[in-house]
Image (cartoon, rainbow, N blue to C red):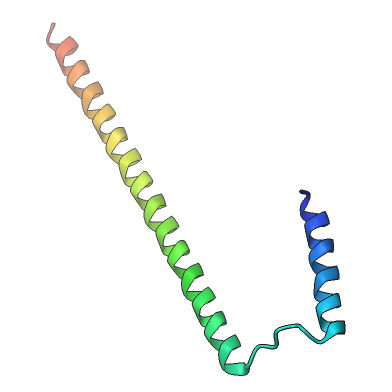
Length: 81
């Protein structure tokens, strides 16, 4: 289902439950706790993505160094001939 269609259906549902009086009302304490948990989740994902990026950069640097070392060894071999 298209995101716009889903959003419109959700919006209409939200309006309806408020009109009927059956919508859930968050307490300040509940809202604060949910917001805190969401923030922790976002921070965790951000840290994991950063660690993965650093790992990929490290692997790329190591591969580059190995390639340079192989080129140096090859040039030394051919220089001796």
